[in-house]
Image 1 (cartoon, rainbow, N blue to C red):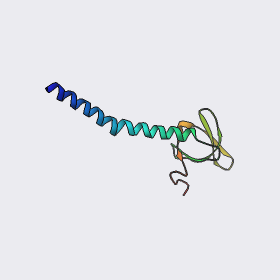
Image 2 (cartoon, rainbow, N blue to C red):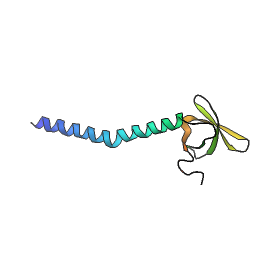
Image 3 (cartoon, rainbow, N blue to C red):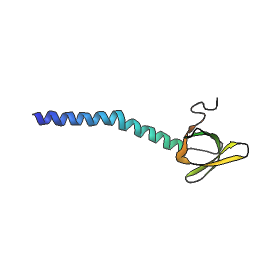
Image 4 (tube, rainbow, N blue to C red):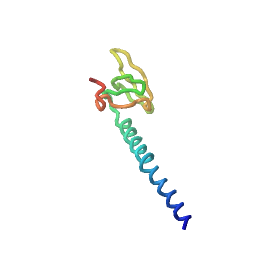
Length: 91
């Protein structure tokens, strides 16, 4: 009977970790992946480093951002943190 309680506690702990830590992380990762895959030219984005720019070109694993008039930089897609309009970075 004590083994059943031990197994029950173990199962309960795994379930708690799954629903409090793993599931929300998977949901956030899916949302981020969807955002990166839906990038379009002329989208205003914020990089992980805090640079705000407008997407001018999209390649397989990178994007070109116009950060100032005539100044374009290439950034890996994984370096895009968010769309600027989603987090009010343009205010």
